[in-house]
Every structure is written in structure tokens, then in C-alpha cells.
Image (cartoon, rainbow, N blue to C red; front, top):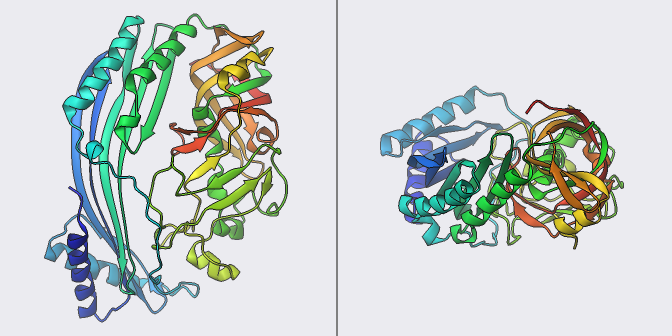
Length: 448
């Protein structure tokens, strides 16, 4: 059960009183609560239904340029007092940070509506009916289904002793399915704040169709191929680079954007924004210190334009914070978290039709960084990799390992589909298009 505003205020009042009893007046509290329920299925049958309810509190005092954080899930009076004492004790043991700022002042925060009562109250029976329909589709294709369907709600409240109070309520539903044959597999996944926006049967049809089309896969020679990356594959690969759009990362010399701000590094057709208010996004409209998020033009027509600034990074650079800071203390600073890559007007079917010979990729996995400055990654395709010949899909192919620079890849994009909310396994949900890319580097055929 989510904590309401009155309960959060009461908890924060106890935090403030416990801190004052120890001579501390600057203190911040994050109060989180929520519930999540998960229906898991495998071998064409539901085998698990679990639900959890959780509430937690973390507090952060600021004392003479020092700070630390402690947390608890005990929200009775004794538990609150104990966590405040612990946080203060740890803070007093730390060394002072000359760049540490006082707690954030209150500022107007634009609200977003991402809470749907029907999703918060979704029942196991409701999820089971949807899963049963999806399993039926896969069974009729002679395949075996496995996956999950989850629904949940959460509330985050951030308050501090300078009068800041920020609250965000959200629901979230996720459905993922893998359809497996003897020598093939297909996959589909989607998420939405409102579970009515998910269509498990349609996702099952997509997964089963991919498995059917990839039976008896052929083995192709590795090399540079034209590739059509579906949105999930685009998400999981491009999602690896956005922690670098950070003032702290650039200052620390660990970003591939060092010496590249204001320069054209991608193709003309690549424009990327960070926008917490995008209608297909999720998450709170404020950061880990309660600073309102503002939209960022990260890349415009291939040119790197803006980066994220936490309050501390902004103060060091003499600019305004962008509302992308992580809860303090942390070593990472900040990062954009609501990525939207602008799309085009070519659907995946049109991309296939315009391709004489290429590879269609459903998704990627086991992605690892090889070169942090050139942003080279390796990984593998899975759950639906296909040969395109003469403008149509002609066969499934065995999976490849790839070795590709994101800088080069995003300079070789020949076509973009309309952007959609996509879900993957290697990166958080993003709004991305499918991409047709020339000369994508596949280095070997995998065993999987």
C-alpha cells in the first residue's frame, strides 16, 4: 500500500524531530512505498504468482560540509529514530566535501499523470486470463511459451528541512514472452503505465511468428552487413551510452563526449532528447534532490548539444542544474533518464522491402563495452535473427556476435521508423525507432 501525503509528512516530522534532538537541522528524507505482483509462466503453464508490498525510508543529513545516507524499512517511531541516528553518526565520521551544497530549496515541479487505479488494482485472475490467451497462441503454433506479466504501483516522496516536498505516484505493467521451438525462438516485450495499453495476445503472436520464421536457421558468414535493428535492439545498444551525457562523467574524464560537445559525431538523421514529460515516458519529474527535470536536446542532427547537470556539477560549472542528479551521496553525479530518439517514416516492413541483402535483428543480449571512448560494444543477437533477400525475409539465420562502435553506427543509419516506447533486457525503457544501418560488423557466428 502506498504511503499517502499525510503519512509521509508525519514520517518526515519524526525524522526532523529525531535529528534536532541530536543538534542537526539540515536533513532530507526519501519515503518510498509500493506493491508489485508478478505472474510467471513456463512450459505453457503458469507456475508462479507472487506479490510484495514494501515501504522504505532513507535519510541524509548535511553537517559542516559532510553528508551520508542510511535507510530502513522499519517505519515505526523507534525505527525512524534509529535510522536518523545512524545517518548522523556516519555523516560525522566522513571527511568534509568542499563542493557539497546545502539542501535544495523548494521549486515548482510540473506534474505528470502516470497513476492508473485499474493497474494498481489488477488481480492475479486478470493477469492469468491474459497469460492464458498468450499461451494459447504459442501452443497453436506448436511452440512452448515462457515469460512474465507484472503489475504494480509506487509512490516516491522527497522532503527536506528547507521546505522542499516532491511527490510522484506511478503504476507500471510489463509483459514479456519467449516462444520456443526445437531449433528456434521468438520474443516480444512491452511496458506501459496503464496495463490496458498492453496486448499480451498480440505480443504472443509476434513472438510465435518470429519463432516460426526462424526454424531451421541457416549459417551465414560473419562480416559487414546491412542490418535492420528492431526497436528493442536499438534500445539495448544505444542505451549503453547515455550515462556519458553527464557533466560529472566529463569532468572525471570517463565520458566519450570529452572534447566532443558541440561537434557533429552522428549522422544528420540522429536527434536525441531527454524529456520526462514525453507521453510515452515514465518516472518522476524531479531528480534525486527534488530538482525539477527540464527537457534536454542531447543531440541535434548529429551534433552533441546538451548534457545533464546535477546541482553540484552545475555549481562547479557556473550553470543551472537540469534536474538529472542521483540521490546523494554518489560517485556518478547525474545522467539523463527519459531518452527519446526521434524517428522517421519508414516502417520495418519498408526497410525490409528496400533491402537487397541484409540481416533483420529482433534483439541483442550480453552486451559489453570494448572501448569506452570510441563506444565500441560487443554482444549477440537472439530470439529472431533473419536473412533478408530481394526485399523480403527468406530464412532464419544462426545468431551472430557483433563488434560495433555506436559513434560509427549512428553515422550509418539509412532509415528510421516512427519512434515507439520499447522494452529490452540490457537497458531501461526508452522511446526509440527501428534503424536500418549499413556495414554493421558481425564478427562470428555464435553457438546459441
